[in-house]
Length: 120
Image (tube, rainbow, N blue to C red; front, side, top):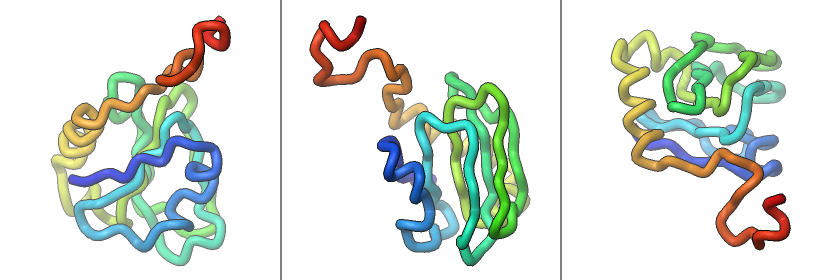
């Protein structure tokens, strides 16, 4: 499983719209994020909502174009090719394994390169 990390506001806003349709074992990971949209996306996607420990707390199978989805309390969202979760019953393990390997900083109060004055 390979995830493409999208963490800036612009990257998260565009999401899969700025990328080619993901291959079978590829997806995008929106951090931080709790809601997504598929407006003008030409294909369905599987959506996984993750908590801060990278565990799946909600999923939407084959979310069609022109829809919105959200999960209260989600820390991040993974978008996968439509039908991926049904084809791969171990999808939660694969996504968590890929996320743990990447471990992005999700705390908005403290980012690398921030001065100590901006952290307060």
